[in-house]
Image 1 (cartoon, one colour):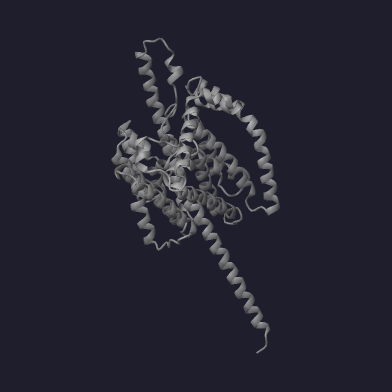
Image 2: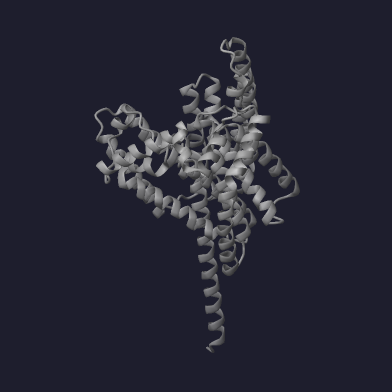
Length: 464
């Protein structure tokens, strides 16, 4: 398996030197590649840095100008909050690494996203390269993990002396129950794009070619199976959030304001029965995962359904109970220092994990981080509304695909993700915000031309 992965890696990198989207798909699967080589730190660093050191200079050479915006200012404020807590630390080793990760995984990938959407095609060429590559790589690692987990199950069954049904407790398709979030980050990205394309195919006829519609349907089916078998409840909730968001966005595209408000009201109203229907649907999915995907009968999806149906069940689930404890600890740290946050070395020393995006930013970077995070989310939401009005089908497709990625990561980030796995979330935010800036610039140019034409007609009407 290591040999096969090495061939896939080298082949993808060679293709990625020509097609930047393929290179970013490799970077999205950094955790999978590095884990095959024993969680090699060197492999992880190289694959994460390649898009930055190779693609950004390449785009700058194409004379793509980077325009500083208000969002950039608030991201700098957020990084300043992290930097302050790094300086408050007694040791700079681990805190310095956290700051470097934030700069590269968030700041540099945000800049890269904006540059990708600043070209004449508004990122459409990149999306055509990235979407199939990240889907294929994610499915490759799902099949690879399925084979590895099957071998582990066979060995455990051979050496199990307790007489327990090992297959019932350890069977899984993707990575397994309690898998590292680095794996579900790739699945999140791939399935979010596939869902966005499927929603466009349903609500926006003519945007996708027929072969793309078929490919999107197949990708949704296969990635949904892999995501379900991964045993990550946050990923399941992220898929639901992406489906709802993309369905509403696709239905709203090029519609007048009155129709958009109607669609929004209907969509929000549909969430009420969806909430009550979700537990039995999740129970059915849990039964399917147990019966056909080899997951244990008491798998995380069944526990999620139980928690949604009865909040008292949260006390019986160790994972849910643990997250409640993390959030309580984080809130106590926020109360102790709400403005500047907590010194980074203390958080590293105590292995603090917030398991919530907003709590994490408030703790690690103080009020600066919370405000910066809220501004980023607000800017993406505002940009998404403008994308709904564009007549450019390619711009809309790029926009909805990256709104889907952003929403998918944001949803899962409320339960598991940290900054270490959020690079695609920030890259997607950069693309959506840059698309908005480009659309505003085009609207301003059209207005200027219209005013110039009106002035010309008026001057012709005035006699000499």
